Length: 505
Image (cartoon, rainbow, N blue to C red; front, top):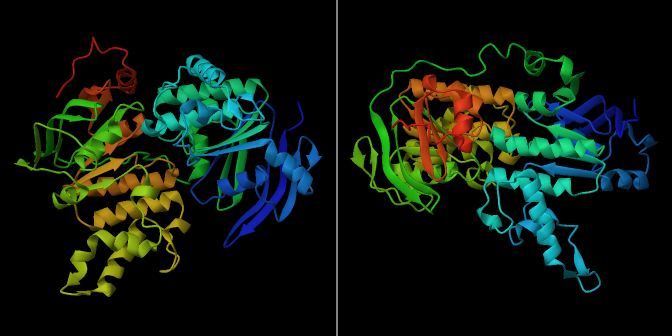
């Protein structure tokens, strides 16, 4: 067997109240080593150590058999490692080719920094054609969707000269066909002998791409094992004791009359003549590839994006929702896909974030019943299994899973009757997903109606009553879950049998 590219031996690291304890793992050339565990289990901190971004308190790191023992060897490790995070920057003022080849821009004259645009665009065009990327090199970077941006980041990794790559949750929020592009790129990287660490919460991704998987929990290493001799259930059992009995908890709730309906909705040339309805107690799943308009549809329904429509009805009554304030007034709540920029008040603690939309409920004249308000928030924190620290703890100090649960808790506390969830479980651990699915079930049990926009088809199949598929600027399918298969949804999303398929509305 070849020598490991990287070996971590007996690693310990303490930051604030969290500690990595006696971690030992390795990464070989051409190997994909996946890290899994709940948010806050220590995956990202471990990768900061593996990338040379920070030093361990004790233990030893070996890079290409050489002990990383001083600033020089630490710099060697750092310069040979590319760490791509799910929130890594895209340079909005640059073109797609400039983003991909940032740091490796070809110059006609290096001294004068004269860019060779002909060569730059030629190389970018070859890359797009090689991997059949879901964008054109002349597309506007600001108009790319989440999945397209993730793929662009992987392309940036592909053209780098690093020995080690770390992908932190880059697969989350992508559909199968989009993941296939990334998997093809990873396969080519490993053929070059590059070693790859992947952080993911998706069991399917592990089985597709990994050679080894390491499970972390509360800073400790539960187990490292080869994927080819491990089953999905083996990994589930290690991630969470007792998990797997009901991965997608689903309650049978009577479906009532339509509570929301739109007819012939159009927006920005991306959505054309979209007609759909949501019934009382129903969970409607909306899916589609990157650029299909699934998030735009959510923004339109919530008054956050411009649109035209023949009719928009709430409980049978015409409404004019031109802003989020109008949507909330009509009883609609929305949990957007980008929680950090659209859902969280960064400067407030978790109590204030959860309480914010419900202030009126606890106010009379000019005073707020703060004791009643805080007790209600504490109840929701307990229901959602959010580890409460102190009233002064900023919400950004919580893991992404607990942040997402806090966002959902604040809207449930506001008692709206229609919920729009956009990628509600992206970048969060399995235990937090279960908590969110249970909260969704509790909502529909109380007569709430829900739209879930998701690229995770297993999630759609597991939690929803009906699915709507967006493709080629229109609604291709609107069917009961029991009348459609996962394969059908994938084929519809990529447009492989439009002619043979009759949409049902």
